[in-house]
Amino acid sequence: DQQVKQNSPSLSVQEGRISILNCDYTNSMFDYFLWYKKYPAEGPTFLISISSIKDKNEDGRFTVFLNKSAKHLSLHIVPSQPGDSAVYFCAASTALLHGSGNTGKLIFGQGTTLQVKP
Amino acid sequence: KAGVTQTPRYLIKTRGQQVTLSCSPISGHRSVSWYQQTPGQGLQFLFEYFSETQRNKGNFPGRFSGRQFSNSRSEMNVSTLELGDSALYLCASSKGVAKNIQYFGAGTRLSVL
Image (cartoon, rainbow over all chains, first blue to last red; front, side):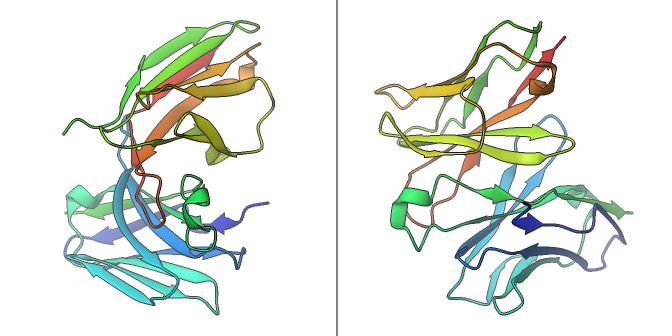
């Protein structure tokens, strides 16, 4: 039962253009979402997060959008740079609903490999 | 500030053996979570420890166990290894409060032959 899905295994964009990575979830109890980036031979690195009370959060070149009715979130990277080439994971938790008790349990999507071409 | 440290980075074991992996969290973090990453299943949650107590558990068999010490360092143990246990094992530390961020180590690559 895949509660968090990233349906696109890979994405290729040109440097300077926008990268849009998508994520869908099925569990309506999820209320906190995170995006991580992973390079080979390294652990995932936190990028940006959003709680269910918001529909948008920005941090520099990264913006995450949340559509609760569609159970969909997306990560926008503008402008894309070659150094952004990595695997991107979205993750979800029920952190807010259950307070601190569930913050240590993240449910991850399968990941999307982004390639930014110079 | 030092990041999350996992040791060893690589391990090769044979079926039936047991293995212990270690994780040192970021200073001040009380929560340590463990994940298994495989090509077919992605990143799957194993368990979380907070203040030396297991607070959450994923859907893994009892062969997978863990513990946390008073200094928040954590160990994960896998007994009676199977070929399917070959994976990258990642640990993540956090403050353990609502809306907190988990910070990951580089992982331990376990190969079971």
